[in-house]
Amino acid sequence: MNAQALKAQGRKGPVSIPLFRRSKRKDLVEVPDRSDILALCALLLGYPDDEFDFLRDDISKAIDGLSPSKPAKLLAQFWDQFSGQSRSDARRHYVATFDMRRQCSLFLTYYLHGDTRQRGMSLLMFKQRYRAYGFNPPENELPDYLPMVLEFAANTGPGVGEGLLRMHRNGLEAIHDALKARDTMYLLVFDAISEVLGPVTAKQRAEIDELVLAGPPQETIGLESSLTPYGMSGPDAPFGPPEFTCNTKGQ
Image 1 (cartoon, rainbow, N blue to C red):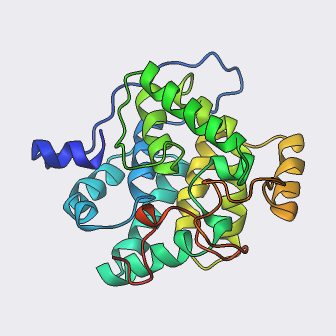
Image 2 (tube, rainbow, N blue to C red):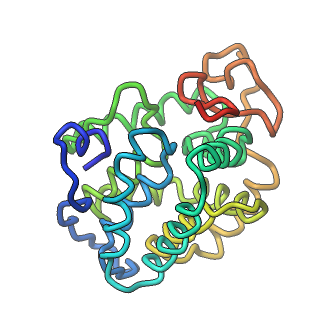
């Protein structure tokens, strides 16, 4: 259940996620409270606005209530660091981490398709997958926004929801690698996600290294396309439409 639903219902209890559907994957890493961990990652990777502040007590209780595991420990470490900040510092840190550099963009299809026309088809695939399983995210969010994909995975399980995460695992790990080069507590959340999804293969690691080195694909024609990053360019340009990207004051 997302933050909006909790707030609408006036709930102040722990975050609750339905039991996940079992996957037939033989290489699935067994993690206690798997769906709750992914749901918490979805919340923790969202912008810490006033609505997030409303859920602080719930998030703290949910993290404390997780069964012992490495991902649970990582989220507890993150929450200790996050809770030690002022609200304004937390917002500034989030913007500096995710909104000011394209290497840390939370829009997953960017890493697979870059600014090419194929990205539009991939976004459509996300929407179709959501509709097929009765998942109704906010219309004002792009469907490949990582917190949204994590929430979908938490609600539909390894066999369905995590399929989208695994499809974009290279992009996830590219963000993960970029965060390792920065002094940010959000690295701990990505560490937890990687623990849930399991280790990458040698082939994936080579592909991720190539992606990090070369960057996402680039369109060679039609650069005026609406998928071009909103009039901005360069590796350090913010990535995301203005309505989805916070300003440097965290507003």
